[in-house]
Image (cartoon, rainbow, N blue to C red; front, side, top):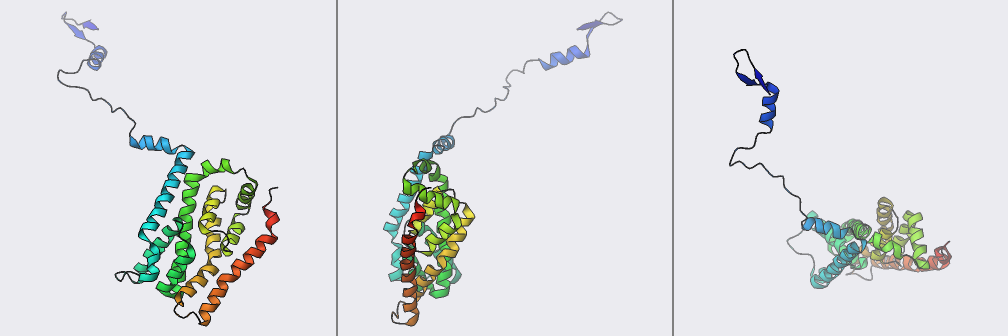
Length: 264
């Protein structure tokens, strides 16, 4: 607004001047900044795709198929015949073998073969240590993959009597069920990992039972691998007996306790 002073000159009030300045147009040639418009990129599309349980299950199957193909191509069992690369030794060799052991178990390589190789390469004690570390590592990786990528899609499919019974045992009695599966070698290592992942078993009981339950069988195979050059030695014979005894005992216990797998 315009105010008239005593001299008759019209002046603008401070409030009106502030209003005019706030609505004044931008100077010619100056373009006000435009905020960036968000757009859906490849990351957003991948996130939406992985939100589907069956998409995650497909990814899990693809990863496992790729791991199995990698084992067939690289043939890690050649370590048993060709030996460890000479450029690796000491602690570095043990660490590399532990990581390779864990990845091989995820790719369905039988643990007895890996345990024999650990004993042949590193001896009984270090072979046992690397095998146990690789066992826990591989079990944890498989459990994590199955839990994150497969549980949501596979749990609705647990409709059979035996499947429900096994799921109930693992969910309610996770530690002792997994301990029994590790102590008695009737259940394949990879199968126990993924069954536990689909169930409601927690992480720490699974890993602890895997560590404790794998000691006897792993030690027997590591000793057998370390003494494979002397198959008539007492240590080798005792190791072979320790390998056979749990298998026989596990078969007897499974037969006697078969009624516990009936659904309630």
